[in-house]
Image 1: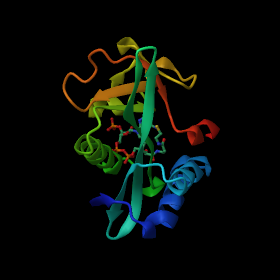
Image 2: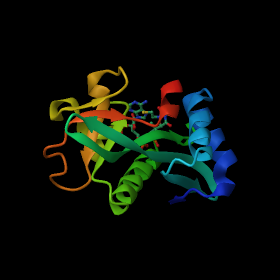
Image 3: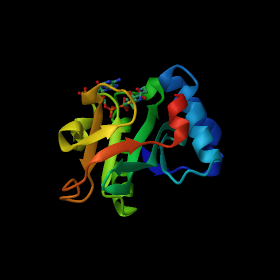
Length: 168
Ligand SMILES: CC(C)(COP(=O)(O)OP(=O)(O)OC[C@H]1O[C@@H](n2cnc3c(N)ncnc32)[C@H](O)[C@@H]1OP(=O)(O)O)[C@@H](O)C(=O)NCCC(=O)NCCS
């Protein structure tokens, strides 16, 4: 398996994998719209024998409180082609994506997703740290990861995704 940055030639295959994994076009459309809107993001693809079988997107989020505002990054959507799930591809995409976020200089990463999946990458519930999601999601499903030790210190607020996420 190879993991690399997504390039323009991957767009159609990324759409296909996102739509197949989620069983609907909403997440695939979101990825396409974010990219068309030029939202600065980290986007990785997984290849098996030159076939694109997985994709993960990380996009910037704004964390706002009365004390001010700072930028972080959020994981998602992530998708692995249904025939290739449970073979470690999603984990490899998460781990390399997290590393890319760290190298890009982000200090905190968030994810809104399955509480049984993301803790293996170090994500933990964010509410006990005073960090909340703009969306009305189950509290255990919104998680945070320190990309830099100590980054959670003194950070509180509400996490806002790009407005395009609101439609999904
Ligand atoms: C979630 C997803 C990206 C994981 O990719 P993957 O390559 O199958 O994952 P891995 O092989 O690295 O890890 C497999 C583990 O993930 C778990 N897993 C897979 N889908 C899961 C889900 N929907 N909820 C909870 N755990 C899930 C498996 O049970 C397995 O757990 P185990 O290691 O304890 O046995 C993939 O299953 C997928 O594309 N699902 C559909 C789209 C989706 O739900 N995306 C995430 C939205 S938050």
